[in-house]
Image (cartoon, rainbow, N blue to C red; front, side):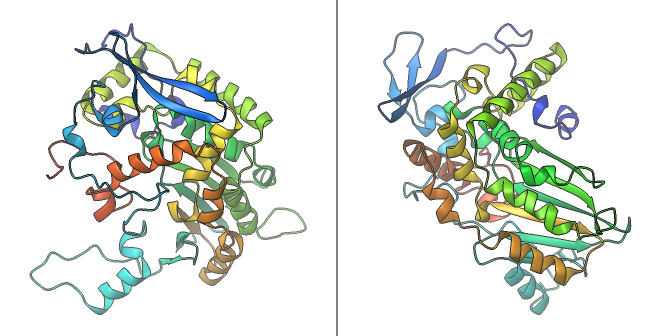
Amino acid sequence: VVLASLAGVHAFSFVPARHNSLLSVPTTTTTTQQYYPQQHGVSSLVMKDENGGGGSKFSLTNLFSSDGASSASASLRGSSATLEPHPSKRDHINPLNALYPPNRDAAIREPDSESSPPPLPFHPSVQSGVLSNGFSYVFLPNRSPPGRFEAHLQVFSGSSDELEPQQGIAHLTEHVAYMGSRKRERLFGTGSQTNAYTDFHHTVFYAACPTQAPGRSSSPMLPMALDALCDVIEARCDPARIEKERQAVLSEMTMVNTIEYRVECQILSTLHRENRLAKRFPIGKEVLIQSWMQDDVKTWHRTHYRPDNVLLYVVGDLDPRYVEKTIEDKFGHLTAERQGSQIKLVELKKDASDLADAVVAGTMKQAQSWHYPPVRHDFCVGE
């Protein structure tokens, strides 16, 4: 019931419970994780035991074990030791799943045998594809209501993908990338609705617009909407915008900090005690949010906002050929290599790579659907 009630809550509704919460769960070992800011161009992650133990370098055990102990965690069984330099470079199925064109064509040519259960049928009007840069999209024509469409850009990264010094940065980056977009502002006054939200598993930006701009010009709105969504991937992360959105996020943190929500957070933390959801509420930690600079936000953005780590959904009263051409025109120039080359805090790239390997390798997210959350449970991870 709690999970269902939280499913529709956007990013601003996630506030971690304070230590004096009524339902705080006692632990046998008290460990804090501290991030020491950049010194002479180098930042490091250090684990510090409050009981007097010395610091130890970042490890996946520190991130996944429920009590912060340094012993091996069962939730990491099956992790690969071979890592790529970038977290999105993992062997996994396309996020379109069965709508991935090769998979769809194969299913049509060679239907499953009579002994196997029938697959879910394809909608006859759905169009899907992948650009040469890895950008995936799906379009469903829908004339109800007439003269309207919606476009949603889903980034497959949320708070559960954050490293220890990044708690809350997915939500802040969502604010910086979309609320600071000049191209998004062009949609104002056109009868359009735009917004964005962050949760544990993904970040979504959307625009609901008329197909034609009101007024004498009656120019098509789809290019304007996709311009705004493309601007999300190419966000500049200006210091002035970061400071403005930092204050907005801190205000949200104060607004939702109620006893009812703290109880809900404690319940969720107990239900997900063995995985990262218990320790990565999207609102993050205030002390970290107040400390981030441009390089911190840009590192998160360039690491996760890549054409091969997003999926665009378009639904509405539009011609399929026009939609496909517009998507190619607006997103075809993006490259994962360019995004990766602009990662500022390169020492975090290896840590993010380790984390991505641990949460993807051997899970349903890798083998069955990219939409599954990056969660590993003790009871479902093989040796």
